[in-house]
Image 1 (spheres, one colour):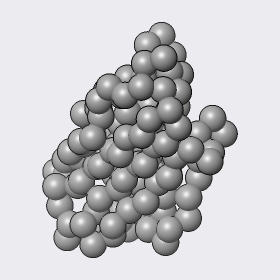
Image 2 (cartoon, rainbow, N blue to C red):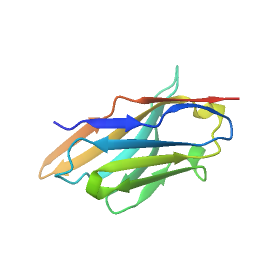
Image 3 (cartoon, one colour):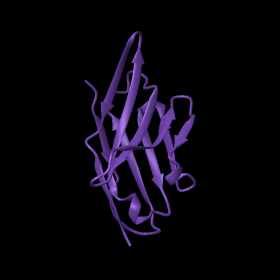
Image 4 (cartoon, rainbow, N blue to C red):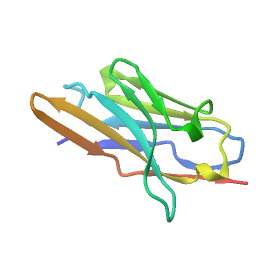
Length: 119
């Protein structure tokens, strides 16, 4: 079993920055795609950003130019640098790891970390 451990959430004023980290408990295998999702109260969970093992990235339109996703493949760790934060970025941010091994696909989730942006 693999666990994803997130850190870096908190309270910040609008315009500020936060950096989230998510580390997999095992580093002995590769993870194809790592991503960050968020869910605000009363809203559906949405993809914020994703990154492949090769470094290809994808961002939600709402965070393009403000957030940067990166990863350390050797550590199976993914980061989310969030700049110019807005109150609408307030949500629980969860880390996701998507691994394909042979014919099997494994999806793992972190426990979530709260990000609150005050106006």
